Length: 432
Image (tube, rainbow, N blue to C red):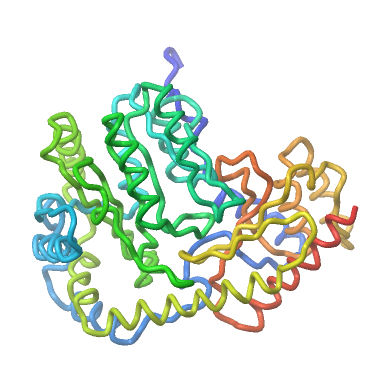
């Protein structure tokens, strides 16, 4: 081309959670039965939608309005409902104008980062959820900035590390937090969220909170929204229905804008996000129309409680089956539906292997692992030897070795097989 047409951040657009599927297909084509433990889609793993929620969707589809465009920011009645829900919690009060809909959280992430000035950076946690880290890096053209989650302290944010990085990097304009966290399953207490808000207040930053798993908490924890603790700090909270209904195929998410009137630049930035939505006309109408009918239904609280109990039991089961593997650090999750297995420093190396009987599969695995991170090497061997598809921590913008596996399998026997197989494979791999 006469001019270089490639965006400076193009190389940062990576999403290991889905990219690893392409490798899985190659193993599958050689005859390996694959078990997909990489994607956080409850429906694909066998969860059935509650009949009363299905009935609501049928009612909405029968309404001609669900087939039409809606307002740019979203269906007015839904935005009024969600604003009222925020205000019931206490803390920051919002209006329907502070609720803006997007085609899923992924769409919101792309715009929230994409419409910042390129020089304005967002620091996020490591391990980092790929959608956020890739979008921020692509927006800036530089490697994503991170603060540490401490695996020796239940994956809690290291506030000292965060504060020092913010203090000595004046390009940082915002702090990202994911609560409950993906991939670690950590749930932050009020003191932790208040500590992060205090840092944002001290350095005049805004907060971005991904709360997509906010109603999937267990092990004695309770849902705590950023709006309840942020005080006078500006913020953007990302919510959606993909995980808690669950309805991932709806591609329906929204942001709650907190304290937009406290800073003129922040208000202008939020207006830019809304202007970008006008170019698309609006987000999908039907799922938005379902939200008040589902979340406002008297059965919804029991629905959330039952699902949280299911994931709590699965988390305990997985941790029990994976207990005692030398060199591993496993924090039992308290939210979301993932388990992260981390390895102590130096445990993984480039000489470890798993037995693979099929010579073609073994040859492909050996070719794939050349020159990659040690945890990526383990993940490829797991795929070739067992058919289990997990995601390496190195795919989460993380320098620690480990991998993430889901807790979504609904078939009890198969789920136990997954973790028993993982435990056996890890013991074999680490014995080399």
